[in-house]
Image 1 (cartoon, rainbow, N blue to C red):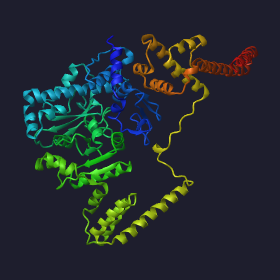
Image 2 (image 1 turned 30 degrees about the horizontal axis):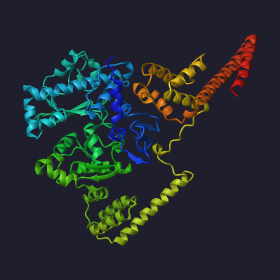
Image 3 (image 1 turned 90 degrees about the vertical axis):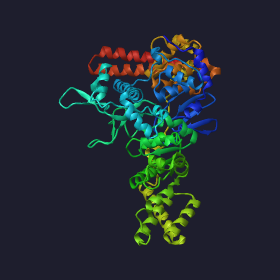
Image 4 (image 1 turned 45 degrees about the horizontal axis):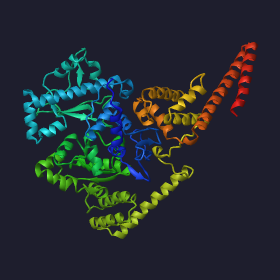
Length: 613
C-alpha cells in the first residue's frame, strides 16, 4: 500500500484555506461568519451552500453535500484521495506522489463506457499533439499555425495537434492498445464502415483542437482542414456523446476559472478560436460555447463564478442577433451583462490582425456597451427614423426593456437619448413608458388573482422546506454524531445492543460499520479524516449531517444511552407490529395455535416497553 503519511495529509489540510479553493469553483459572499454561494453539486437559484472558514468545512443545506477541502476537490473534479491531496499539495509547493492505494481511496465511480471514452480521447490528444510538434508529417500544419500567430507556448497550452491524412492511423493505434472500437465509435473518434465491421478515422489531415471539460479532461475535438478543399467542411467537430454535450461544455472554462474569479468577470465568445485569439491579447478569462446558443446550463456554471458577463460575438448581423439572445438569457438570470461590439462586421481574429492585440483589449473588451445601450444599437438596425412606424416601433421596443428597470437614473438617461434620436419629446416618451408600466402592473395583478392571489415563484426558486426528522432518525443522527467525536461511544453501543444491528436505517448502519473499520486503522482519527476515506458520496452526506448536528458533549453518556433506548424501543414496536400482522394472517389461514402464540409474543414485547418509559 502506498499510503500518504498522516502528517503530510494534516499539513496539506491545515495549510490550505478552504475558502480560497472553493472560490475557484463557486462565487462566495460573506454573510456573518460564513461564506455562501450557489451549490456546485445541484442546480439552485438561492444560495444554500455554506463554507465555514473557522472549521474549514462546507455544507449545502439544499442537497446535504458536505466535507472539507480535500473531499470538495474529490467530488468536484472526481479525483481519488491521493490525487486531491497531491493537487492541493502542489499549491503549497509540496510534491506528493499519487500512486494506486487502498480501495477506500479510489475515485468516485465512473461508468466503464465513459472511462474508456476519456482514455481514448486523452491518448488521441497526446498523439495528435506529438505529430504536430515532433514529426515531419506535422511540419506544414505547424508552419501554418505559426504564420497565423500561434506561438509554441500557445500550442502547448491548448494541446493543438495534427491528424494524419491516413484513413486508419488512429484506429490502428487504438486497436493495438486493446480498446473496444465499438465503444469508441460512440464518441465519434472513429467511424464504422457501412455493412462492415471495420472502422476508419473521423479526423484526417486536420489541425486538431481538443475540447476540455471543466475539470481538464479531453471530451471532444474540432478539426480544421489545412488549406481549401472542395466538398470538405472547413471545420469538423466531434458528435455529442455520453461525456460531451454541447449544452454543458464551455470551451476553456478549465483554464479560465481562476482568472474569472480574480477579475470577477467572464468574456463569452462565439467560437473557441476567438478564445485562443483573445488569449494572445491577454484576455485570459474568456470562454466559448461549442456551436450552440448559450444554455441555462452554461449560465448556471458561470453564475457560480461571477455575476458579471461581457459578450463578445462577431460584429455581423448574425453575431449581433446571437449576442442579443444571449444577453436576454443572462438578464433573465439577473446577471450584469455588457456587450463588446466589434465594428465593420469583423470577428475577434480579424480585428486583432487589422488593429493589433492591444487595441482589441483596450478598445473592444475594456470598453463594452451596457445591456440597454447594446439593445438600442440592435433595435436601431434597419430602421428609418423618417418613417413613423419605424420610430414608434423603436421607442416601444426600448421602453418595454426600460419598464423592467428600477433605476430612475437609468430611465432618465435613456429617455433623454431616445428623445434626441427620434425627435420625440421626453414628456411624450415618459407618458408612454407609464402606460407600459401600468399595463404590466395590471397584467401581473390579473395573473395573481387568477392564481388565488398568490404570486408563484419559479419552481427552482421555491424555498426548500427542511425535512423534519422523525424521533428515531434524530436519535440515530445524534448517536452517530457522538461516535464521530468519540470512538469509545461505539463500545457503549456494542455492549448495549448486542442482538442485532446498532442502527435502524441501512445507510446509518453502513456508515457505522465503515466508522468501526476506520477507527481500527486510525485510532486517533477525527471525522474530517473519516470523510476523506469514504468514497460513497451519499454516506459522506449522512456523516456530515451528523457531524454538524447539535449534541451535548458534557452529558455524552446520558445522551448516548437515551438514543440507544429510543432505537431499542423503536425496534420492539416494529416487532410488535410484525407479530400482530402475522397473527392476523395465521387467523385467516385458520391456524389458531400459531395466531395465539404470536399474540402472546406481542403481549410480552408490549410489557417490555415499560423499561423504556
